[in-house]
Length: 283
Image 1: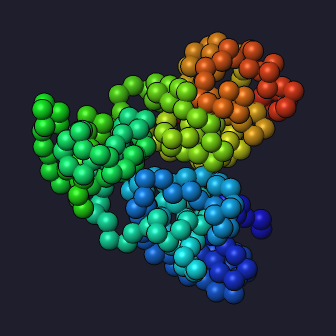
Image 2: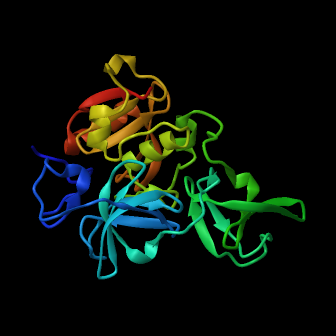
């Protein structure tokens, strides 16, 4: 059996105990839970900061840890099952359960409830925080965070409460966000990261990479059925139909999240990725 290394924790020396009897390894372990403790953590396929990122995890997201060595952890993301390495300093085992998540593309953490304070950190949409109180300064509401700090209350909603609007409207809020290979945040994002994060914000799960999305996300449709919210796939690329004529996608051509006429995009992309390989409707 061939297992996808992106979604299954296995190495020759070590594997997830759930894979015992499925794949050979020197030993098997049960993962231990941890939580992302930094604004954005890059997940890499090897424990090396010079290695490119496969994806990113956001503050407050959960992982299972299978190994720790030389300042690195080998983990599996709870949200989408992605496996890789993050620095040990990116994790915590004793963070409080998140109560709210960020619902704007980017926001700041302040050392206290005052926007005039120098910022402590910047957070992406989808980040999860534990709120322990509220405050108001000069008419602006703040949530006070466990462990200290404050965020603009209007930039967050309780965990599980969808953002207003459909997922296409969420994706459009990232227009002009820089393109980043493996990116999955408001600071930099790739094509499938945009699809996944936008769907996540309306509480719809999606696989991480474009090939996974093209195989498993929603239902297959024909090209002549395309409407708002449908997905278009090329080999190695994904885009969201904003309407019947407009494609919204993070792309390496503009190096941003951009709008583009769909037919023009098909022609432009064709020389590199050929014609679209499929169309799907998330449901």
